Image 1 (cartoon, rainbow, N blue to C red):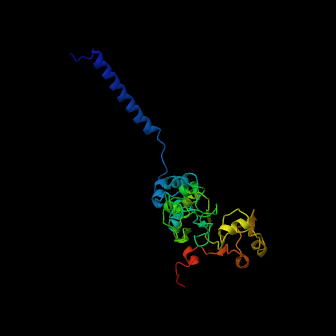
Image 2: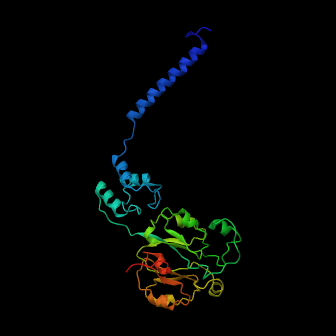
Length: 284
């Protein structure tokens, strides 16, 4: 077979190949002249971040957050895992004031361990809160209580959540980076992020009436409203039959704790949840 430029097959190959080379050259030229130069501080800011990609800052990951602080003027104090070290480094890089944000930590609004709360049947399925919740509404008689199968603990990137022997999730605040992964994971929406400085907590999420709560839990809120009478500025108020704390108002809750007939309200300084549960003897 004669390979000549007049050969249709050769002509087609040359045409296609030549067109590809021309298009490639044009694209290379265009990429050079029309390229958008990225601020070099973005890469530097990303290098300063811990690389956890936890999403606690509100962005998809460290790369997005680095771009946001440089290009979109986002706050530089949103990286909880990085702490003050990252904050100071970003402040120096971007010539901004290093003002620390109020740190938040996760809190499980339930104190119904197996010692306090009843189970309605023996669950023998997958050790997962979603699976347990989907099985007859969960094996706990309280439809609002912690199931204790560890879904929140498994998604925690720092191991800040522990499942106790009484099948209750507790948070170790000193390890919490406030990423919010546990908040999204709990099928019963028991976990919230609260200020680290908060000390008074209502460890219950039940919206049932008092007589019903008493049937399944020894430490559940019965909606008696006695706690609300012990505060002056509505630091504790009622959400239906459930007492709730306004974490924007610091206050002395000792009287509310004393008057609570179910011991639902507790004082827990967000430094170690183990201390309140008597599982860790802290040094003075």
